[in-house]
Amino acid sequence: MKCLVTGAAGFIGANLCKELVKRGHSVVAFDNFLSDETWQNLADLNIPVYCGDIGNNQDVSNLSRYEYNVIFHQAAISNTLEMDIQKLFHANVEGFRNIAAFGRQAAKGGIVYASSASTYGKKSGACTETDIQIPLNPYAWTKKLNDIDAMTSIGYPIIGLKYFNVYGPGEEYKEHMQSVIGQKITQALNNEEITLFKHGKQYRDWIYIDDVVEANMMASKALLNGVAGIFNCGTGNPHSFIEIYESIKDKVDDIQAVKWIDNPYEEQYQDHTEADITNFKEHIGDLDYTSLDQGIKKYVLYEYKKRKGIVN
Image (cartoon, rainbow, N blue to C red; front, side, top):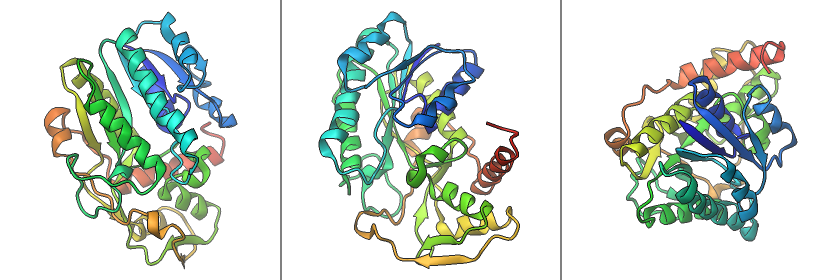
């Protein structure tokens, strides 16, 4: 399979590129490299890499020198605290439309793109793709617009994966946008105070990075079999923040006690995320999900090795 991956140097994009190469697929990588250190995520791969802005037609057209079966569109501004509407719209909406238009010409197999569970807003409990969705922030709104564009696309196969709470190795560069799991592992290994919003009863549908990569692989196969639409990409099994702490506590020596803090983002914060994965199972397939405890174990081991210089 010949693939284009946008946002290729990011957390999900880089892991996806590595797995595609590992499985023998041809990959072209595209990223804006606004985070200086992310180039290292692709440094061990022997693939063509392009630097550009997905919101710029000329930058996207430069990719036409290659042929593609499928585009994995991961590029976006993913900062939920970003309030510059024009900046978000340019990257997330105009960028999506540029890639979709390019894909019609260059990737007849279709597009798998990164949607987001943030579009569900304050809804509590299991979320289904047909629920009324009222985003709480501009980022989530742009992702809702992507979904609307995808659902109104005629004659071109597009699958949107509504990522729930993705975590795992490779997200360190995201800093304050790193998953709560990643943040708490870092605090624990640094022997820092473990801060959690009062009183740890926020629930998240955590999905390990390897499972998200596999979901993208499965979605690309489904595309080629005529499947299109928007699908939740989670486990359907939410866990609380305090459960995260307890799991990390079992794997890190001398972890400090929790310091409870107020949530400064209360009005725009999702207290409970949970994916109804019925449609994913029916149309894309069954995924053997990594359990939360196993995912945290892998993540902690990775961080231990990285600190010892065993991994990059």
